[in-house]
Image 1 (cartoon, rainbow, N blue to C red):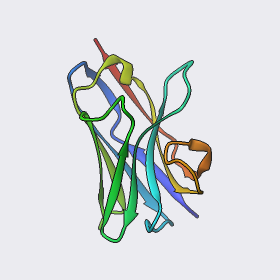
Image 2 (cartoon, helix red, strand yellow; image 1 turned 90 degrees about the vertical axis):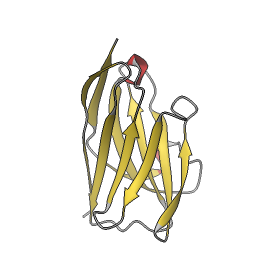
Image 3 (tube, helix red, strand yellow; image 1 turned 90 degrees about the horizontal axis):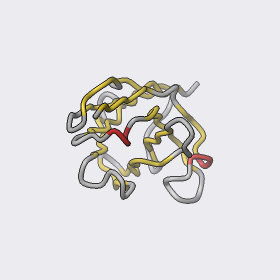
Length: 126
């Protein structure tokens, strides 16, 4: 049984940083995506950052809204993917989810992913 568990959310002031973690069990990262999504109340779900796992490395993808501020990375030994979020803005406030095992199509389309975590809340105050 595949489980994805997010952690690291919280409340910060604008300009601050948070690091989110997505730890998986029952799933082997290999030649597929692990991606962070977010959804704010009343807004559509947005693909924030994805990493295509290749061997011990990966190819990263970012939404324009977070380029230069967010960094996605992985820890092979811990089966964990991180999302380092710097220079946070109030508009980054959302529930953040990690998702894995994508079918063919764009990395940022949530409907293509087969496994999801329960989410972690990020709140950025001005």
